[in-house]
Amino acid sequence: MIQAFLDRGFHLTEHDPDFVIVGLDSDVTYHKLSLAILAIRAGAIFIGTNPDSNIPNELGMLPGAGSFVEMVAYATQQRPVYIGKPRSIIMANALKRSGLRKDQVVMVGDNYRTDITAGLDFGIDTLLVYSGLSKRAEVEQEDRQPTFEIDSLDDWELI
Image 1 (cartoon, one colour):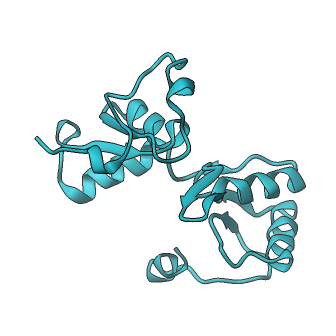
Image 2: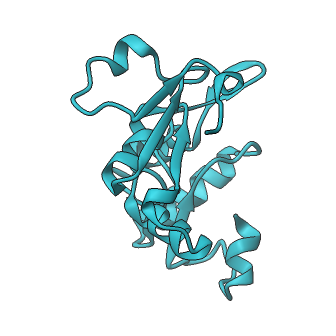
């Protein structure tokens, strides 16, 4: 993500930034969190990449980007502006970049709250994979259901 911002002409600074972007960081430190919190409390705009609480890994369900975002939100007493799923802007930009239409794509994910909600809100088909965070019994209670559901990506057959 850092390289993507640098490629767009942004520069990184630890001193008086205009924006603080909090996302998944497998090398997070107390120092990094402190800098983010101090900058936001001093007026920097607080941006979260996505609210995923966990990410599946061969070890199990590890903390996701949303875990870090919520820690910073708690310490700053400010809510972030989210730029990733489930916000529609990420879906609109993906379609624009790919040149595809809504009826030609499907949002695939293992998290109902972020992945599937993003697709449903944007009006595209969704495929919920139950090998990750969301559980079938929980999703059955939701008012809006995924278009398709499978237990594992191994079960996915293209038509």
